[in-house]
Image (cartoon, rainbow, N blue to C red):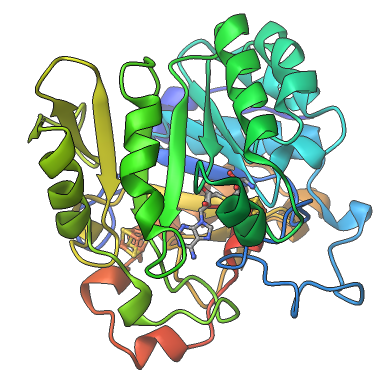
Length: 346
Ligand code: SAM
Ligand code: SF4
Ligand code: SF4
């Protein structure tokens, strides 16, 4: 494996995109497979028995991912999120975590449905992971089982959260995708459950990622609406972002019992500060969650390209970046052919 010898020389070329945005966050999908079939992400009708997932040989190896992260770092990447599909179904993921966590300057985290978190929490912690984000869409078992569509119970997700907390993967962030008429009446109950727990609940507006989840604007509950619903029961007030480009708008309970976040990709686009890029499980880079095309880095890796060559390609892609999908979303753009969330990584 060849690593860049002079990172600072490569850093000098760290580019901003056409809108002046720097590259700061990298989301890495380590698999396009998942053991859930969340209706808003991998609907069963599409992701059924016959669906062709990537073969193992098509996935980037851990060494390839590590090498790319090192190159991306020279372009200014500070945060890496491991995602998927369900990242914990990738065998021995802790090996990758250990490789990436050996760099103390990298803020490394992982998003999971928590189905395997109880078994994996200690391994992940020992490998050097510091935090996890867990997806949970309702405290109502019936609603949650229907949303994950594999009859997975809330209690096991809570077990996973508890295990993560116990080994020190905290505070745990909890992601709840809110879909009108499906789980929006679970919002206050979720807030009640996690209020005072030390964990941070974040509400995500249902997004038109990909083309298979049947997205309609009428199913989106705006963050503004959610703030009102929560504020009526548990008064909350806005607080400052931790850093420029933070995706979630932060609010805190007035009684001091913690904070909640709102991710409003649909109703309050945050493209202006978007510093994220995504690496698919087969090694293509996408500069927007709603992209139609990616750029294949795996072929470069596997054809013996030098770090400098790969770095140039990444730099050129970022420099040419114009993405602002959420600022221009319409019912028509929602129908455009887009890459699927389970493939590109959420
Ligand atoms: N399987 C892991 C999980 O569910 O946490 C990681 C991958 S998942 C694609 C990452 C995040 O994207 C999850 O929090 C999920 O709820 C969110 N997500 C998936 N589809 C979405 C959609 N259509 N709108 C908003 N968020 C979505
Ligand atoms: Fe799987 Fe996560 Fe998508 Fe649900 S949101 S289907 S858990 S990848
Ligand atoms: Fe970034 Fe694309 Fe989302 Fe805008 S729509 S915030 S450019 S990922």
